[in-house]
Length: 112
Image (cartoon, rainbow, N blue to C red; front, side, top):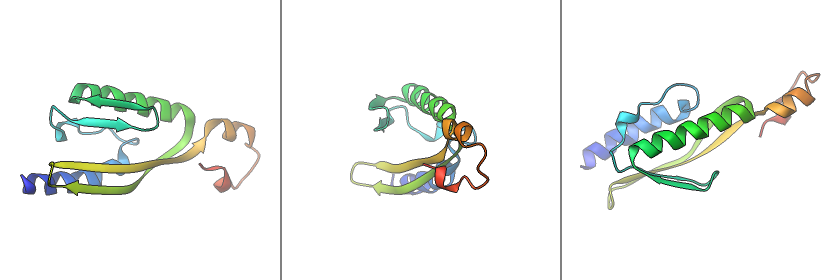
């Protein structure tokens, strides 16, 4: 089981930064995956609900940001309860600021 956890850790470390840019491989997760979303204050259990909640997050993020990237703050393994925990942050250019400040060439300070 520890070997499986190590493989999952490496695959998530490679796939999570591209979560909002490319389609995600949901077969990585077990059927009892738990997703705690602090942004939307949602807590889901099960792969189907996880796919739906992540699709909702992707939809909302791409409707708010013009340019978007995901930063992995921390990815930890917990072998005592066989879990992986990821802390991440979205960084991007809000679309309303892009429209309001279209005349600026350097938009670096507008990123949130």
